[in-house]
Length: 308
Image (tube, rainbow, N blue to C red; front, top):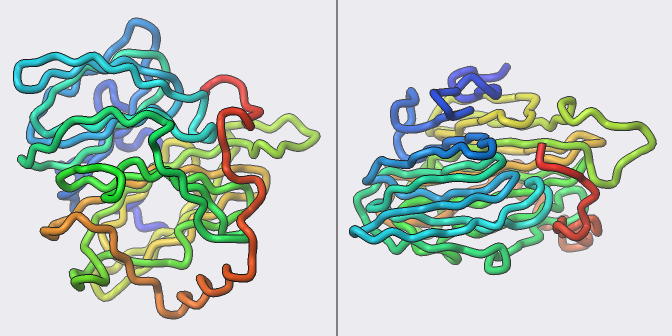
């Protein structure tokens, strides 16, 4: 049974011009946030709060960002992509002292974490993004690590995005990060923002993009009770305050994407996880398998048209 406290279908978190908003005003939530919006030509949105660090992530389309920090204005072009399945995109990390205006045509996400610690704002080009092919066989997935501790100097935010090809499993084995065990596990809230589309391997019939879907699951750990078993589509959001999470599964005929946003109360900014002991053995099975040859997904290999 899906835990309605922690899973939201597209539109259920709409606020003003934003299609979805998760922030500390969300019940039971404290350390992470996300906002998703779609802009038409001539439209813009203001990011006018301070004491919040952000990463602006184009999902579909390209954007101009004007930000002000310490009395100085900077203009940045985020060269985007046609869809989230077209490889990495430029992103912009904004320090907790910056305010900004976003203009462009397309859909973008703003990942957030409250902090007064000021780290340098940084434009990360798509070519600078570390691309990881994780897992093997039917557990192969592609990870864009632009906002992880190894790639970005941030105060609290840990952000990455994952592409799971049709019929593959990701966020697997199920794992958790809800206890502070130095050197082994960290406490991190996590947001999953999902998109899905007909797989680029295609078929003889014309697919209906709105029908695209995947599946996502969470279950309880000693830190708390949670139960999500959901059919996920573009714009859906799952919140993981604690508990084991995974798998995220791409249905046959459809690819699955999710944007992960993490932060927590620990002093160290680290992504340290514990696998569910019942399923940890699965990692060893990858040693004798190859990475799915459909990966990596890049703009040059895409067959999709348009950003809708």
